[in-house]
Length: 219
Image 1 (cartoon, rainbow, N blue to C red):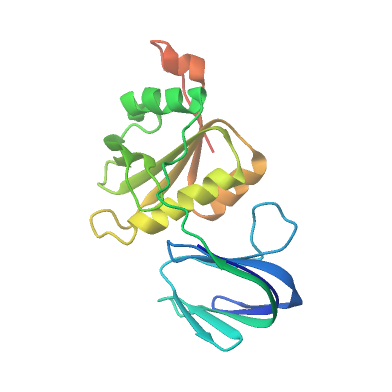
Image 2: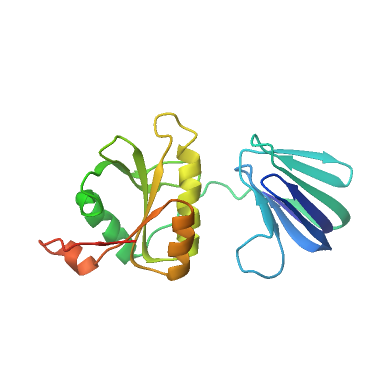
């Protein structure tokens, strides 16, 4: 990972045009090929970013990041305060808490509780950014990427979108559908998921543990 702290201005051209005036910012160049521009606010969310795969070209004080979609992120460096490369090594992956782990096991054993036509392909399907909770196919044969959380928040939907982007590059699975599953899904997460064409399903853990499967809530 390259960690760059600099006074910089940023411009983006692609689906729309956007610009950030000069200010101190953190720019992260990750080994997976992604680039993210952060301010000292907004929690984990970057001000602007480029998902992999992308190409980084540096010419003097200008960084030009482009991707196959024709999008371009241009970073003008006015004053470099810190520039450091560090090898973080292999990522062991996120360990789910007990509830999420149990939900994944229970749902994997009865994916038809989410939709009548779902068939499980594999649990923990590996990608280069982490494992997909459940990879399924529906009655039409389309691949369905299922992300399971105890409480569904926007970050979980974003994670699901990233997994879909990865699998959509593989002709065996593309195009995929997304399904976001949790015991409770926050309203903002539902709105964001629906804007990306992702189904939201709330499940009852006690019902899944029992022998009777009550109707699940589909949003």
